[in-house]
Amino acid sequence: MNQDLFERGLKVRREVLGAEYVDRSIRSADDFNRPMQELVTQYCWGEIWNRPGLERKTRSLLNLAMLTALNRPHEIRLHVRGALNNGVTKEEIAEVFLQAAIYCGVPAAIDSFRIAREVFDETKP
Image 1 (spheres, rainbow, N blue to C red):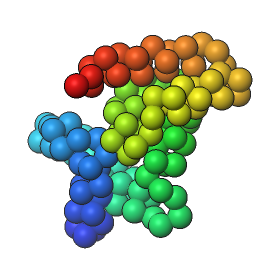
Image 2: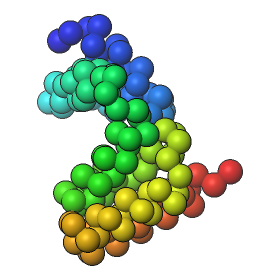
Image 3: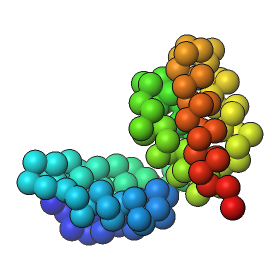
Image 4: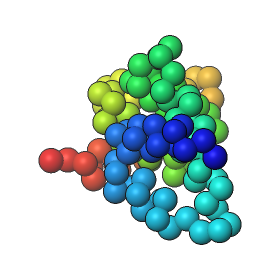
């Protein structure tokens, strides 16, 4: 494992997804899934999310579209929170899901809208 990339990834991962969620994921890792936590933190968050080519907001919008296409509700929930942390508005999230409805399928987009609404309700001040 590249410790520098892991630390850089951990910092970004905490900033986007929230320290509580990330720290719980790292803490609960065991011998079986620890390598996956290390890979995700180092490669996804350390290498890719730290690249200069796209802003975090843009990366969040892309993730929401791709996760809708893949129909991954747990990850959609997580990345809706991350998108809000990265300055994406509810209106922009809705537009991503509407766009995805046309290209990925209406049922996938409906699920994403439902999940996003749950996150919005949970994050109301």
